[in-house]
Image (cartoon, rainbow, N blue to C red; front, side, top):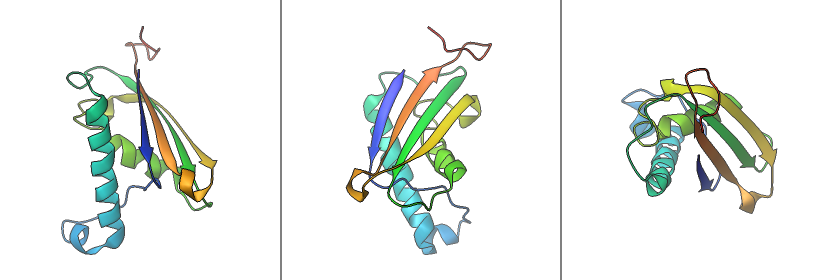
Length: 123
């Protein structure tokens, strides 16, 4: 199992075009967050990306109540592509939750675990 904590406010995935990624402030914020997640994940990886099925559990600690949980999940799993696993299509089990917190405690806690071919947690 791989466990990571990404400090700071969780940032949801946003739709963008090649043009808008340079002009849209939300796209810029999202791209910076993806790089941060990827950099932290690289620090925890000891080898090549996982090749089989994986499960991902996310806990987003967020101040306030404006968050789209599926876009938060997508932002993190996209950022882990080619680092923790080869492609986010390998994610066969997902769990995501939003937990309220103080502004200075915002973060995302991530657990990635390998699954066997039946979708059970591998030993």
